[in-house]
Image (cartoon, rainbow, N blue to C red; front, side, top):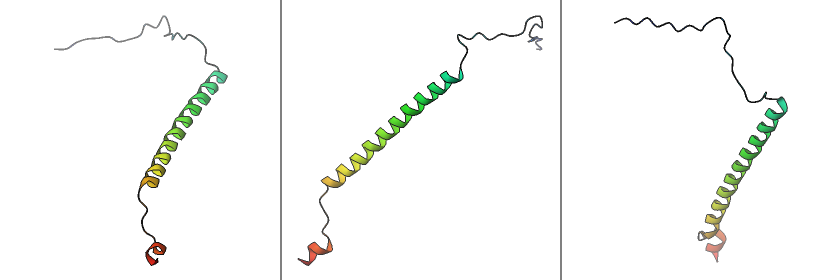
Length: 72
């Protein structure tokens, strides 16, 4: 079974892409700045939560006897 399919673009009109607005460098820079600020904020919040959790767990654990405590 042989199929003869022609997938050619008609040459009388060039393909056109429609866009809603022309992107400007200022808009792209603003979008990149906002994305970077949001991602940096999320990373700092996660790191702060982890560090706080670890310090909280350490402070709630019973202290191990040190050499000075044993000598008393």
